[in-house]
Every structure is written in structure tokens, then in C-alpha cells.
Length: 259
Image (cartoon, rainbow, N blue to C red):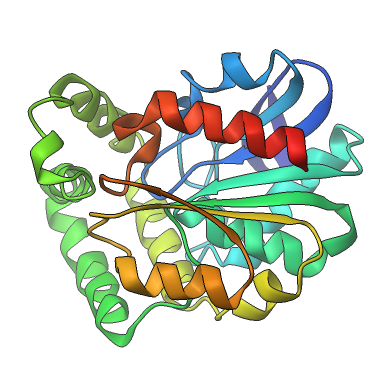
């Protein structure tokens, strides 16, 4: 299904009945990342997935997709569907957007799960990497995207998940160059939202990978502690929905039941 938001097409799916769960994908992903998870969760819940601006089947909206702008598209879809309260699950970039939604609509959030994500802002080093990538991508889009995807997995999993990784790369290449740059700019400029997580009265869960190449493990442990969030640790990388899918679905079901 498609919703028009400020003259931009926003693609979304809506499956199942029950407590509403909004699944928000990460950078260079789209709603298809949840294809193996949605059927399980929609048995007892109403599951909404959304293609973020510049990703999948959704259009771009300008040249900087801030977390607030991303969140606005999510809100528009939920308003269109007349949904008042919901649980958020955000992978990586999706987690940053979830925190922005929690900041602006705390009373509507029943639970928030950060999947391989963080409430911390970008380090200065990562900001420089994003700036450099945005310059490189205009001439080396395909090679840069493919390399970026491979780097998200625990190195020991590259052969085991070869087919899945190729599928992720194929979907990632559906992201427009404009969408790539706009999302990177938005992530680079996002604010620290530790306080949103710490002060939230909703159910909170951090799911992290011990070998995540994007998020420093010790920092994630400290974040969970200081924000009083439940913590689940998997032994692999940044792509827990693939590297630890079966265990992740069990964690999700337990989390949703307790929200």
C-alpha cells in the first residue's frame, strides 16, 4: 500500500490483528528485511512495516532526511491507519527514528526495541566517515553499497550467510543515491537521545551483537545500564535478523507479550 506524504509516495504493509507493532528498517534496507519475521509476529499482533524515505519503494523528500522527517512519515502512516498506541522495533537507523517518535509521542509508545541500534549520537570519527561516503557514493555507488553490507556481518558468518548477504545487497541497491546521501546526512546530524530512553515509561529493550562492527560492545552495555533498559546479547554482528533469526523471533515474541 502507498500513502502520499508531502507529494512523496510512502510504501507500507499492514498484516494481522492485535497489538500494533511497527517495524522500522535500517539504512540501505527496506521493509523486505522483515519478510521472515512478520509472519511469525502477525499471528498475534498487527504488524506495520514501512519503507523509509529514499529506500525500497518510497520516494525521497529533499536532500537531508532528518530523524524528525523520517519520524513524520511514520506518524503519517499511523495516523492514516488510525492507530493510537503501538510498539516500535527499529533496526539501526530505524532505532534512531524510533527514539525520535518516542521523544515527540511518548504517550503513544507501549514499548521500544532498539535492534543493533543506539540512543548515542555519532562519534566525530563516524561523522567524518559519513561525509566521506557521501562524496564517494556519487561515483562508486554499487561497490560502496556492496562493501558496506558485507562489513555489517561478523566475518565468520560471511560464508554461512552468503546467499542472504547477496539478497541484502540486491535490496540495498534499490536505495537511490539521493536517498543514501540524505539518510547519511540525517544520521550524521542527529542528537543524543539517551534521555528519551532513560526517561521513557514504556517497556525498553536493547538487542546487541557482541561482534557488531558498527556499535562498540562495551558502550552498548553501558548504555543499557544507564538508560535502565532490558538487554539481550547475541554473539554475532550488526544483522541479528539474519545472523540470529530464530532466537530473535523468540525474543521479539516475549517482548511484545510483556509490553
